[in-house]
Image (cartoon, rainbow, N blue to C red):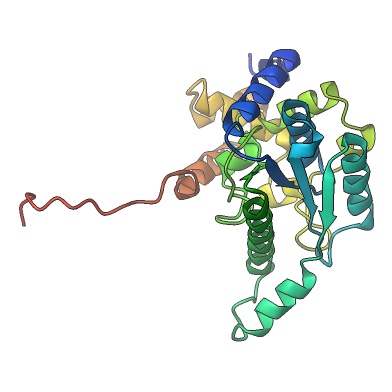
Length: 267
């Protein structure tokens, strides 16, 4: 049977596993830094980092653009205060405007191109903070996004550790609720906030509930697209689109190819 129960999570064990992971990876550093958006993924990562390392070793950057809702900024600040974390707010708008002003017209013709630049500016600021504190950058991506390539290469995909990278979005919601993340954050519609009205599910073209089950069935049960579609009562074309996105975005998840010097190979 393919229903949401297959993604049921032992929240207590998952929390302990992730906190131990954070402790181990940050053992030789002065702490960690992460971007705090006011959304569920970064809120959960912040909570787990504070539990693993203590608030003094967790720095948060709140990095709004001109499209970031004021509510998200307020929620990020409230969460940081409740966790006792250090938090700085830096608007990325003037940085983005400055970069765009130096680039020939036409190169930012699409919303996606501008969105990618915003993500890369945030990465730059996070790594600058990490360098100044001799710490690690914590990525806040989940497995659903990672497997769909739904992140910007060298943007929000640029990080040192991914605490929730093996949790589907459905499981993130479960663990966030278990960990005491506020109902206000839990209820938000997922959005990267890259332009007005942007939502994750609209861009992905599928709900997270269905996406997670398609990914689970394909990755972990090796089910073919036709059987997945029948089990979930969705179109085969939609399932094939999800599987195709995994293949098309593989380069985002793999190490950079390196030319190996093998001079004994035939010419």
